[in-house]
Image (cartoon, rainbow, N blue to C red):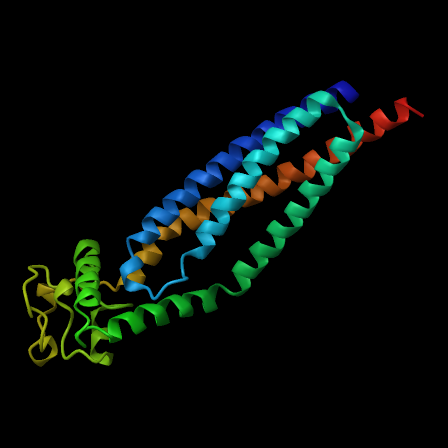
Amino acid sequence: MGCCNKFVLFVLNFLVFLVGAAVVVVASLTIHKGNEFGALLSGGILTLPIIVLLAGLAILLLGFLGCCGAMKENSCMLKTYALIVLVLVIAQIVLGILIFVYRGEAEDIITDSMKSAMDRYGLGDEALDASIDAAQHDLKCCGVLNYTDWQNFNYTGVADGCCKEMSKDCGANFFSDPDPSKIWETGCFTLAKSELGDYDIWLGVLAIALAVIQLICVSCACGIANKSSSQYV
């Protein structure tokens, strides 16, 4: 049974290693996608994927160490490993609950940040204007939820970057004679939510799979550790 537990622990930790690698890849893709919207944000919004990336790196390292611990069958090492994994699982569960509970608040923070950036458009900050124009034109979006958001900002029309054929002042006074066919109608937050949604789902699936594997690892590690300790009694 001990040999079986040793083999199972090794295999499961190898799976943890692979899941950790997958989390790193998915989090990196999320950060890459999120950075495309960086010009529209006031800052500090994309920290969650970075935290997930760091967690993925820690999981990857933990899986590697777990494989080594399973081969050595050291009681102290295995119990320490089991404790670390258990703490990590609890942290993952708490983080998952917080993300679920405060998801609406997180979306409000993001939309408010985008509105704050767009509300400063056309007020003399040429660098900000250029970055918002480039972001909206490259991403083919306009406003936060949709192009009508620009009616609530200080600018008298829509940003030049909203125009399908972008040129200087092409969006000025747009609402005095609106022609939606000439601009991108989808809001940038709406587009971002759609673009990043698939990655959020995969991160959730990976987190659930990882938690199950980790709990089995804790059980196996404790079993091997207890067997190793009894041999020296």
